[in-house]
Image (cartoon, rainbow, N blue to C red; front, top):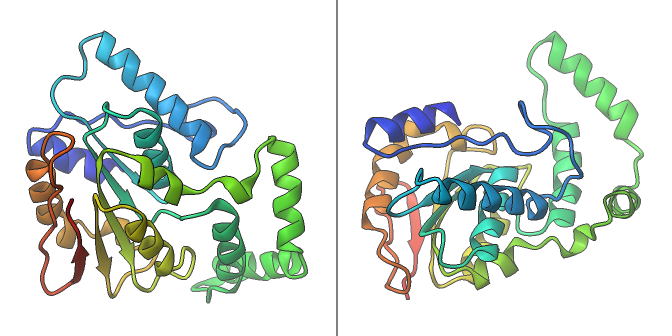
Length: 240
């Protein structure tokens, strides 16, 4: 996230980077696949507003797990977040796990270290019953992963949402971004035809200017949301 934070700061945005629970310097806590993490983010937003650290419009940007967190945060705190940039989010946690486990396991390796890692993963997870693992994780987390659904979150959010996804993403299938886009008339979708789950968030060369334009065009809540323009990349969008 540091390249995005620095880029936005260079364009007069104040940027705050957050270590989610179980990430970076944050402490360990039960995972929520974005739902519990969204409450953490919203608590931080409330505290920063009370301290006068957040003034004017507020946008939240997240990648993958963080993208889902951003969508849940906007739904849980209506009226507090003006815009969400969601890069490579899943639409449903359980479905994302079903797709991601075999995709990561079967991704071709480059180099000895990756080859050894892939061999270990194929041995360790090759015969795993993913559905049983999802059920077990749901019990351990006291959270039904089948119900962790970002389509419901984006549908209920009043924020403008820009969805970005790589068309070659084998971890989180592009159709998940399409499901999210279809769930909200206040969303726009940028599909990057040559990028995957890892490369899409790194494409500042393609995304920097369109995202800046989208941020600056995001209106007060309740007004029509902007549609980003980015040629020659495939762009779809809608307004309300």
